[in-house]
Length: 100
Image (cartoon, rainbow, N blue to C red; front, side):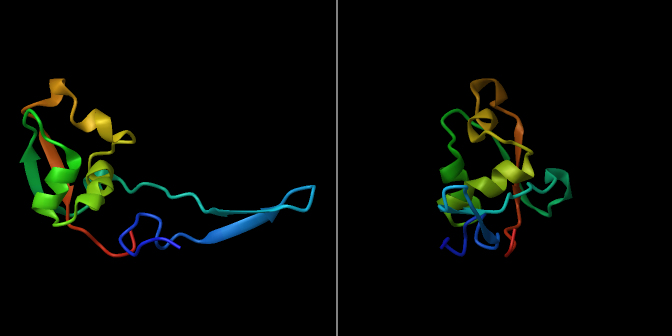
């Protein structure tokens, strides 16, 4: 159902049946790993105009893996990571692992 590189690739699909008999399928909740516990690939200094997809393309080789940077920096909202007030701060880029 999901691309192998998706954060949901290894999550279990479950379902429940509503009172009217309709079956609803969904993916079990994903708990974000603690960023400080992830192995670090590199640290990037945030610069004006940076975007997560460009950063992950440069460092990990896949722009769709931006969610890994969010996890490594304990960010629920990707936009929070690149706010103008954060220019010059360090952004953690983790080593990509399979199954997380």
